[in-house]
Image (cartoon, rainbow, N blue to C red):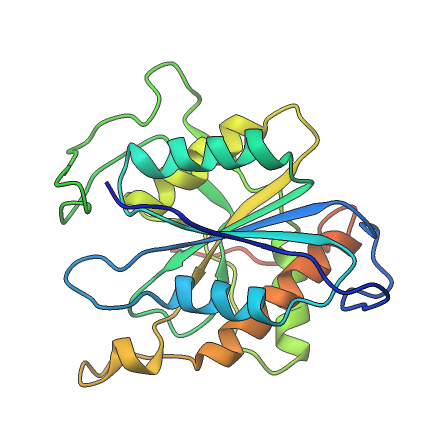
Length: 236
């Protein structure tokens, strides 16, 4: 099992990153994933580390890099929730082939792995929770996040599916864990970094751009009580 790499970023007195926010104090939990499927890096972990390295907000930031494992990742996330009692949780993961930052709208109660996770597990058409609902919706203002990123010139789009691999399983378990608690939470998929996409022909974003997108997603999630009334549906 992989070790969770965890950092606690507390700013110097008087520094401010998030201005005009609802959440002026409290704790934000931001997570990424370790490399998987033979890769040597993961853009989510790299971007989360960059956010932590320059955090300058009165809001406390906890960051962690989770194992790419159906069982271990949700257990580690539950441990972090219990230990830090965050007010906001944004989990992130890599989506190879996507060209934009994509906040996920929904997590489904299905594990169907094309490849094994990092523990060797490869579930086939199994429920994540045998007694749970078919799906959970994100608690993040996903449309408002997409709109804010667009105004900053960062490619962004609303995603209607988190897939059926570990990212979806983590989002499903996260939303189950925070249901009824008042904790705002959700999941954002990220494109490859240039290093990961090198030689593949796949789209990518610079790690700096991805990190800035995460900072903006945190800011919007602290500001917005409800999501923006923007059309974001899809025909397929």
